[in-house]
Image (cartoon, rainbow, N blue to C red):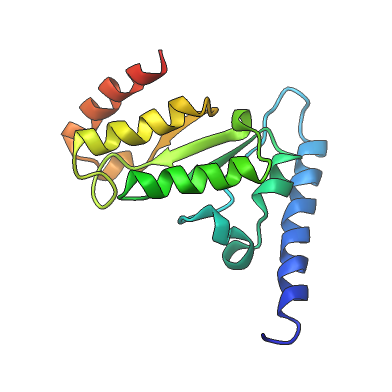
Length: 149
């Protein structure tokens, strides 16, 4: 272990959490605060890599958007279940998905990821990156969103 590493990680987590508390408190009461605690999965690495703690952030923000950028839907399931088991409420989790390579190579694979989100009654989904998507990805999104109705 590197001396002082744990203290450094805790300092980063505290700073990010404190900042989110301040932003939420100072923002207009009719505004919601959404945070993306990671830029790449898995979310379980957020503390070490990004200085964020999704469990702490979920206590102060309106919603977390976690990056569900997995090829294998089982990896997405495991990452989301870890968050839920750590105490992050389902109604505070949104999942960012990419309906394209390198994450989704087929419509069936993409649909299975949307089904995981729907089965867990999570807050919703976001899609990344419209500027780089194939035209077929838009059709996947349109069809896939029916899972939530």
